[in-house]
Length: 272
Image (tube, rainbow, N blue to C red):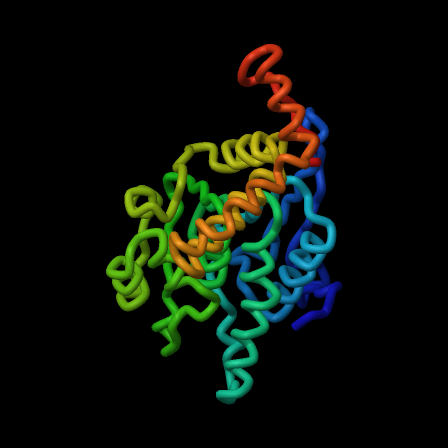
């Protein structure tokens, strides 16, 4: 599942990766799911997302937006992907998806925002949970419904949902396979913002983050990642060096001088 030029059965690529520049000169990458009316995750879709994330890893922008075209974000995984897999093949599938989608997406050295305007199931929801910030429309619904084929979500969804909403909520959502609306997900802490114009709000947020101190955002992600893997003590142990390195950045030096010269809120950042 690593073909870089994956195409759907209809001949069009299932995703679109664009790079745009903000008015302040920061590069944003926008990864759009565009794979038919349901945006199903079949082999071509997985391959395209893997290739896009490899591109982002090789050339990180200053912020990333994941979004979808069509009525739904995704109707989930095409069950043909699972048909006939052996234990060894199933294990290898999940290992590859962690290694090529979930983990590299989480470790991108910039903010990553997921915009959910409609139904967001299984793989798409697990990808959203690997992002830094989730923005949803009021009509969005979320579900990890793998139990309908005798599976449990295996791209990191249960554990990342537990981190955001608590282990009891995670078990409820996965075991019942129910759908949950954006308001509930916001109340649980899974969704960060709910906006009527979800695409506009997400694009505005991504531009704001991209125009900010990118190296500082990356440091924030490193510190939170250390907490996730080893708790407060581990995060404390890596914070001095991680944060200390920021004093060598042009963005910090320029922002400190701007603060002292003209006060807060006037600094501009280049990502360096």
